[in-house]
Image (cartoon, rainbow, N blue to C red; front, side, top):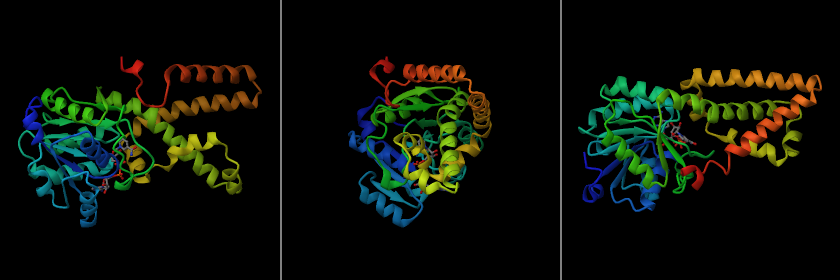
Length: 305
Ligand code: NAD
């Protein structure tokens, strides 16, 4: 593997991206835009996708042939839906050169670690990762070179992961403009179940509930800005979100159970006209949000310190 310190080695570094959609494409695009001098190739599923990828200018090479994309790679980034990870690991495994670093961008880390352990056996060069950045559009047409600018990327290396592998992946995400942090696999999946997966479940359920009501046209016509803000995330890709909920089942169900309890209490307070209780809940929620959510998810200077 190339030394992370050597500029000359970096200019010869080769990255292979498996799945050139929003996340993989934005990774390539951000690197190129920020002056990355290495070689980027992409493993795609159709010749048309390969032609489109090359025309985009984000990658130097794209192909449906795993061997041509993977065999010289120093780093492989898997950026496919969660339930496609295992098959892609099996596909690339025969072509991985010794010391190649394998990383991913999947939204749930436990299942990726299990897949990597069972397919690759050796976890020394595996660096699970998750960019806390995204949008509701998917596919290569949604690629955004600024997607990771100022956003967090969470890495969940195992004790057996080599520091040099973590350093390499960290450096690449930093070159995309991201701020990299590490945390434990299980901790990641529990935190994200509450902060990302639960809100998405609520948005999907809310929009679906209102859409199936008899007066749904009227409801959407008179919806205020808050409704649009709250439900924006319900436009996310159905396959990606199906996979996230199925692979983080236990943590998401715990988060939903806790939320259901709170919602039932709120309903009781409304029915029993308990204004004090309602006011107390709303004040607590406002205070908490105002304290912890200074801007959007962009990391502010204060938070970086
Ligand atoms: P995307 O739909 O934009 O791109 C997915 C890519 O994977 C496409 O190139 C597609 O052709 C390929 N793909 C899909 N199914 C496949 C299969 N069965 N086998 C092989 N390739 C397949 O999705 P994305 O938003 O780039 O998400 C990629 C990964 O990143 C997912 O694991 C997702 O959980 C994670 N992620 C997404 C976001 C987000 O907001 N979109 C944020 C952080 C992490």
